[in-house]
Length: 325
Image (tube, rainbow, N blue to C red):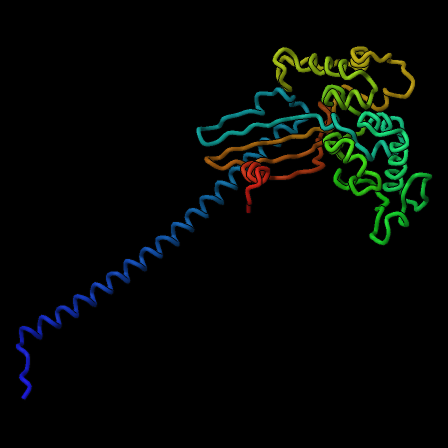
């Protein structure tokens, strides 16, 4: 015969089972609370990040609006401000007309300027003339092939040439013969801009660009740059001494102002087109807003030709070969 357990033993067993069940329930509740807290923390972090990005964008657009004022000069103190320990912005203003607009040169078929540039890069005269023909064929509206040019037959069945002005500098690399430029001068892209006015600003252009376009000695172009930057050697500071007029600039370059070739039509001493780079910091977030605008000082409203927003940290990581999102 089986004897029943003592009541106290049964009570202990039931109490142990109940305690174990309570512990499981407490553990489950702790897990649920922890999971909910984690989700809530992620939501709060996402909301804070969105507010930070929104604030950075508003600050960048405000700084851009200040820089776009036609009366604001590159050394204006308002372009560099620290609003608090967590917020600051800086605007870099450069003349986009320090670069060459290929569309303008091709529209007026300025072969001489192109020849000087291509020859400066080490190309032969024959290579330069052939490339100029191909460039003109790319941007003109007809299918008439120039002597050394290239139209649909030379490009095959790929829809080229586009028969319109270049919309980006990278598009120039698609033109037949540009591979020779890549070999001769891989940095050629840094010389051009489709947003420039088409008149080269000698105060903004780099010495090698000035030397190539004008035919002046590189030594004289470097002297002009040194004089323009002032004592501190920095661009857009209060001691800058830009050339006041084209005659003075040509004299420093050793070029008579009456030189045949129409340099007065392709050179200037000021930029109607500006590139504005706004760098903003809000907390640990950095954003960069870039824009190309047109509108000379004192000439009314300014138009935005191009705008782009980036994260400088991502750009630096990408340049270093680090994967980014």
